[in-house]
Image (tube, rainbow over all chains, first blue to last red; front, side):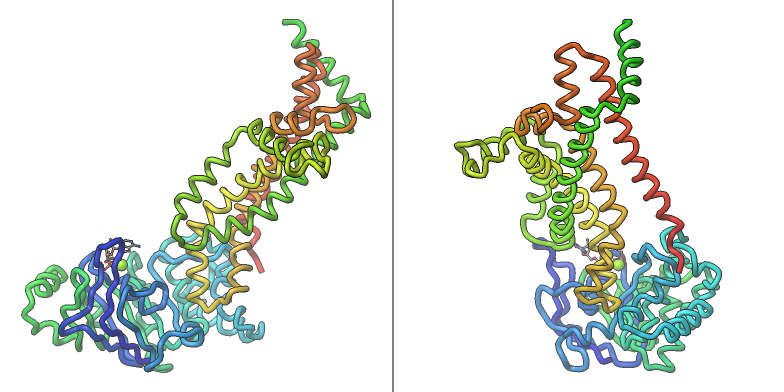
Length: 238
Length: 235
Ligand SMILES: Nc1ncnc2c1ncn2[C@@H]1O[C@H](COP(=O)(O)OP(=O)(O)OP(=O)(O)O)[C@@H](O)[C@H]1O
Ligand SMILES: [Mg+2]
């Protein structure tokens, strides 16, 4: 799914937290790619992602999905997950099955899909546990499995691997890359982990204080001569 | 100090004598407060959820009003209800004053804000998250409603029991609109207040013990429900 934003602006109580204009007034998140959004705390990444995901409305500007404005059909083909997900108070299995249940899928088909995801994310052993009493990392993996269960066309992830152990990070990245490769899933991912961004992203967007400073292929960010970006990158290298 | 000990001895004798008048008073109390809680739930739960999950201008003001009403003195609510139900009041023609119906009305006004406030409070925090999450997973209107009630069911139970607890234990409202008429509108709390005034401590204590047992029982049910909640999610 191609996603284009145009002159997006978000104002909270007279405070402008996001304002895309000038050189980067229009952003294109190309279909079938993995896009990274990076930038310091409070730069507007989550705000931009929620606007793209259709969860909050921009104060001005527009988002187009394959050239169309948002409608229920497009909305139900996209999904959004964060590092602090809300799981439903039912079993892990039932959480992952939820999107399929409301889409009225057959019990056997649901069982097959959910079992595969449980195995892929290595959470098979907790499938009958209540999703209310899990570790942060477990919750994140379940939320991601739940988001992937109904094979969305676009996936928006807000720091999905924050607080995740290295092996699980690898599982998650592999799962994302697999679906991107095999199903052409369009992914937008916010991350503070620059090496992760370079590992999996085909495109990077850099936000700072509500403005976009960079939006291009990842390797090009090394050659921009913007002091904010340079500083950001130098802190990521150790 | 003897009268206290004697009061308790006499109280137990009274309880196990199964006096028909006492049984009738207990049953009426339960009926009135259960009814009020039922109506309070029917009004308060949907309204609390609806107000909670939506963002709108003036939401803060609404919540402040709600929290104020949650702790409104029962006497004031009794007085307010009486003004409307009295013979010369706007609903005087229905002749509801000094009837169990009047008591149910007053207690419904009393418990609705309690139930609504508790549900509202949780719906605006965790409920909002649930709605957002449901939406991102493709849930439509009905799916979201079902999801919300399931997610908030422990909270709804807490609201219900709290509301019932407030209703069954209040004396001000039922006294004013019911009038403590023997065999007709006399309930546990008005019975206790009256007997205490007349120095009949043992019957007061007896009824007090029954009232406490009922509170204990309903709260135990609640705790059972909340604690049972953690292990019940298996397919
Ligand atoms: N609901 C809100 N009301 C008021 N201000 C908000 C709201 N949501 C976000 N903001 C403000 O908008 C700015 C951008 O927030 P946002 O969450 O988009 O940042 P971010 O880039 O995701 O930061 P982080 O890396 O810390 O997650 C912040 O200054 C924040 O205080
Ligand atoms: Mg953020």
